[in-house]
Length: 109
Image (cartoon, rainbow, N blue to C red; front, side, top):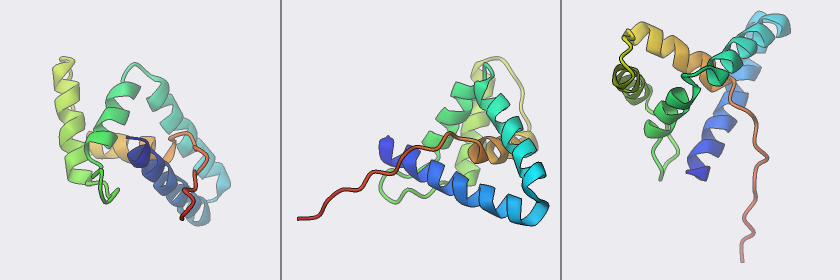
């Protein structure tokens, strides 16, 4: 799970830099604030679970379609309805706002 979480956070930092380059740092900060608000909401655990569910443990690659399906299912289990478009937006915004974790280096022998 730690490997998945670190990969997601690394990708989020890459996306954040791209948003800042494209739209400017003010807009990037607003998008990040919106994502943090999503993650801190009651649905934050569902969002992070969907991202983890959609990330392959071996390769670290995340499937957006799996994340969408997982998030929709998790919302349905809470009695909420969520469209695919809304799930995609939530995933994109939230993924960009995951807190950074220090990267660990495993020494080779």
